[in-house]
Image (cartoon, rainbow, N blue to C red; front, side, top):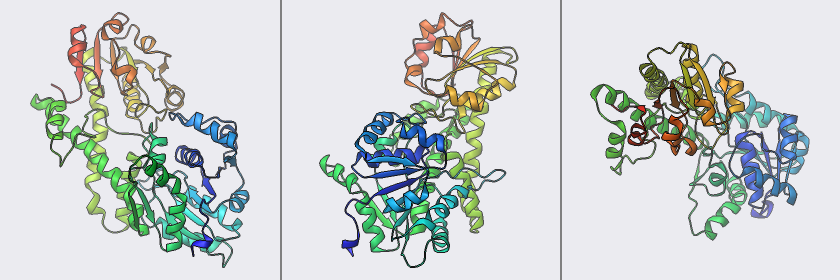
Length: 450
């Protein structure tokens, strides 16, 4: 069997958004021949010219390097992809469906149906997109309907675990690999596909744990992990709600319970909550799929997780109103627009949501973010934007910190105090030193801090 499996399979990546572009570039970096495919011609043109259409540290240089070697190319042709690839990664988006909690699977269907008719030999179609459990079986049915009969195309599921801002590292040095397969051939193909990852691990004297499992388990891994992380974040934000009325400090509470090895201190920072293109839509899609499977009761807690997360955005607005007295007409400088630092992603960003609420309450809002201004302006065109922290807060009645960029964490409160009208700050991420800011004459409000 192994004779029919190439030692270094040629890879295609269907979809060149955040996941797909990162995967394509990183696999080329590991020495594979990679072809990226997308129906968006402008995106393909940019990538082929060495321009990453989003911000991810280190990816631009890596893209240009691998284009120069010839290992990495991009196209809009599914026929070319079918002829080129031994392994075809499905990396398209699965956004929340309009008017529903469920995932919109049209892009997965389109990618598979566009590729399958052009296949002429046995190949492996590998899903990486985050999907509802049961999708791999459905993809198998699509392949059976649209691929030429008898060529033996197989399907596998290999979920991604990328953290925005660390996606290159997470691809080259993953903390685990998960293979959902039905045959030894598919498993061996994936092992050879990730041989570069294993070799890098050996070179650096570290293990790359691999879980070989069935389709449903592989599909559940990502949504289960994201649901747990979302629950942990919302748990500490629920404790922030209690701390606010009890006179406690949630940052000290988190520190104390984080020493318990059964709990740990990661994801225990209270603030305005989680956002981005994964956690919010994934926990909603998970609930929707559980309802379809008749076990919706098992995930009803995720509805409260979602609600806690939303309430913290409203709390940031309340704290700002407490400081300025009346939001209508108040000048508010907002620091941060992306859902997390080291990214330009504003999808479901708490920072954008809070900014919108402030503007709707009548505040005159000016926003600065080191990477996300262009995307924020498209998402929220009704507020003003600045090109620096100082310009964003100049003459402000209050400053609201909504993304924990290093630039904001280490800002000089004395210097910033010279350009505002009133020294008032809402620390929406609990990322500032309250004592330092108060010593500089600022009225400080944090999330879950008396």
